Length: 286
Ligand SMILES: [Fe+2]
Image (cartoon, rainbow, N blue to C red; front, side, top):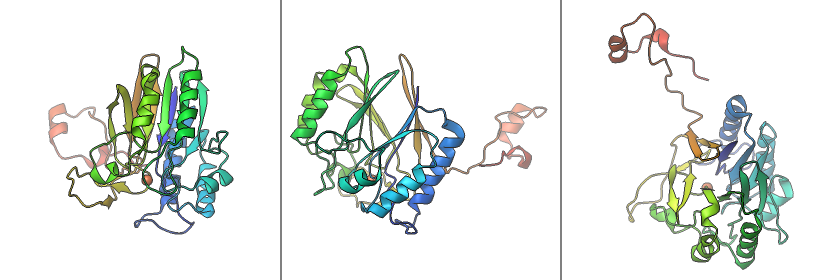
């Protein structure tokens, strides 16, 4: 099964830029690339910060772009989103009985569980009692033989980038308790928020996150580091889920560096590899 994970699209009002970049153009470029190479994906999941300021017009702009995606998708909320506006515009945003942007989807490889960590009063994440109770029930009621995959905006732990750790999930201890008894069934945790490519494990659960489609967060582990954004390249992730494997590929879809064959027929291998790049070996970029 193939899934697409992308995150932190940060759309603004149509025609506006954000940190010197056009979020809609960058999202559209991701969608074009996904359509061209991964239209066979079963689902795409966007893990929040769909918009930067939460205006209805920005959600409409997001929706306009996503209409062009040839893969069905689920959209979750992050700290920059507004739940009401999101649910008003996006039918792809799941909704639980309390109006939180939560839900699940069963697939041939197991259950995908989508969580809402938005606290509209803070950039830190929140899982209140109602959301935790919903998550506990969704985990407990999932068919016992089915693996589980979690999707959420905020990481439920610190990643070492000081300014992002200050706005991670605030209810992480309570969430860890909900997860603890089910963690053996959770094959992967996907999240956004940090605008950086990071992978590892938490409580034995493998996780991955990736750069946003607009701006990024600069890598600096010093607690004294200023909070800097950057124009490092945007990415989306292609997730291949097999019987025994979850493989996550990060793809820098705007990369335009040269691509060319490792070998060239008729040219001595060592001379080709060590020599200057022959002009006619470069393949056209997309
Ligand atoms: Fe973000």
